[in-house]
Length: 160
Image (cartoon, rainbow, N blue to C red; front, side, top):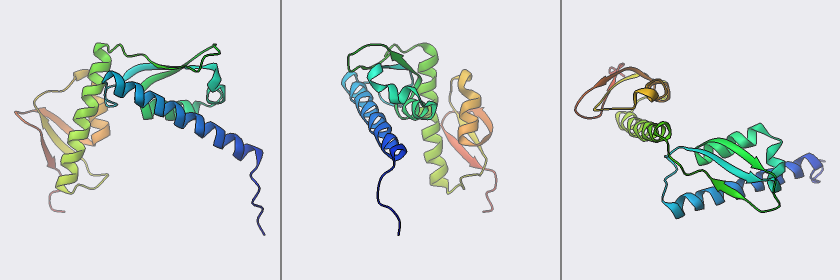
């Protein structure tokens, strides 16, 4: 018979995930309050040393960064319960947010065309941030990206 007791490492993981959930909820609440959508990349989130269990894990920091769409997770030595987003949107961050929106639109068009997950496509767009071109192409499996009047996604294997 298997033991139903929770090990210390499982308890630690549960505690860490509760911290992550709390941080992500607070970050989303801040974004909502100030009106910055999650699709808009931000530079960082700063956490107090209260969340030192997260400080020890790069995997958990990556999870937080991905969920909140921030570049970095920073820590500050303080007794305060602190979760603060850096809401200054630089041109680079604005372009990353725009790229995420473009990718979302391309993925929606891919879905509507019935593309397979690993199927490459050609895409035509009015404009896109040139600094994000490789990212857009990689995330959307684009073989060729060219300028056109409107978004068009062309399947390369149309016989499917």
